[in-house]
Length: 359
Image 1: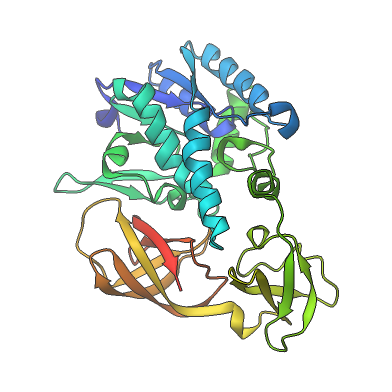
Image 2 (image 1 turned 90 degrees about the vertical axis):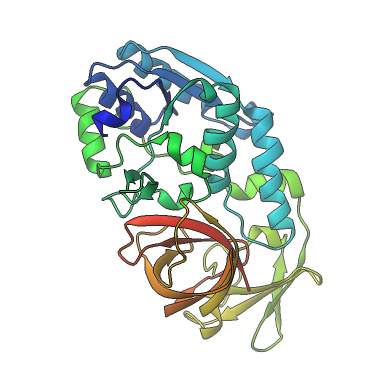
């Protein structure tokens, strides 16, 4: 965190109850600063039914804010989350696509709805994301990767707007996760040993399939082996499966891999055997590409299509201002329409932005 970047600035910290955002508050406190803290509430409509952890999250956030003499305010973004992020997710899965609600939550809620409600009163919004920023000689702000390849979250931030990036601050982005845990233990933070959330964005313990089932229900259909046309079973809804999926299928004689969806006929196509050729793609199209920072269109890049530590080298063949074909230098498993393809420079240092995959 650059002192010059925060000097004389009014700062809001988004506290989630997790260890990462809590260490963010410590980072300010050690500089003698006591920023205003905010807990964004977006819990589900019937919390007792969903076994939501939001009450515990708020307790943790309250304890950390109190420890460092910061004010904590709860901001209710429940309606915005369910109207915007849930609608986006359900529209995509209903169309047979593979959405990423966490990506849209950052754009629409953490840096969107929150800014409309309270964030507009602040110069900077600090979060516990594992990401960094830098300013170039022309004064442009760039989103840059964290030194922790496993925890790096630039892919989840790749749809935020340019003005949101200008307000974003990531005080722990230069750490690796183990260093953050050490700080939390040393400072006796109440959540120092708390496990990382594995749910959807703010939704805590909610299982993704339960989340989908709640809004779309089930729609059984045939599961067909792609190579032979043989029916091997029944699925409960195409929206419960993603291209490249190889676990949780529940069919005998596996392993099986999801390779195709026929939305019109409600058929799920799978392939038998280990890593079948049909599960891989080397060339695919990306549309509606969103630049985080305006720059010249690059050709030699690296990219991700899911949250993994690996970056894949590729060349981009631009077909319009916001559309291109990715020519990966290696075959990629599980490329699916609707996924975000996140583009980085050749050294996977700067995150340039993201767009939606079409096939």
